[in-house]
Amino acid sequence: MNMDTYPQSNTELRWFGNTLVAIRLSSAASDDKISVIEHWMPWGETPPLHVHHREDEVFHVLEGEMRFQIGDRNVHARAGQALVAPKGVPHSFRVESVAGAHCLTITRGDDFETMLRQASRAADRAELPTAAAPSPEMIEALTRCCAENNIAIVGPPLL
Image (cartoon, rainbow, N blue to C red; front, side, top):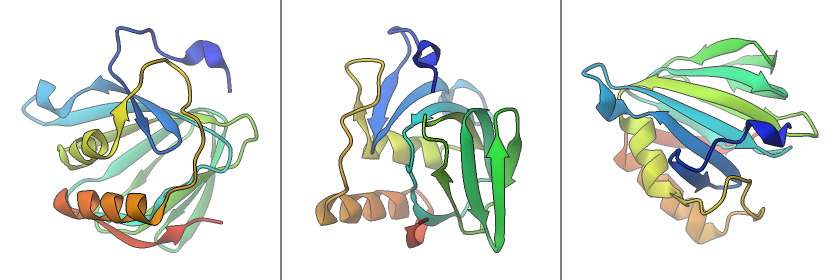
């Protein structure tokens, strides 16, 4: 992953699990509540299988390769490709490229962005956080935070 693509310090940066995110467009910026969030993720990063109840989630891969599970479909996506995880459909992804991946997520609504803000912490530098496996307490907190924002965790991360 090209480290030169990390954002400048005047962007709102957050550490979400083992990823660095930049909120490029907040859902509060328009009546349609469109949110654009940029992600830098290490190899192997994978969220638990989950469902957004009120928002479609669009992924646009900028660098690297990611494997997606969307419902019963498995899709490999590379830089330049975009796909959608429709609301109501369980989905997850896994970063397959050793150098990591860089992508955008785009949603219409504030559920995902609000959950991300609640479950993350401010990043004090534009780089990936120190990698750590989630503790049972962290998993419980994320599950609760997701549920409060109309997102259900329905299965484990991808292997």
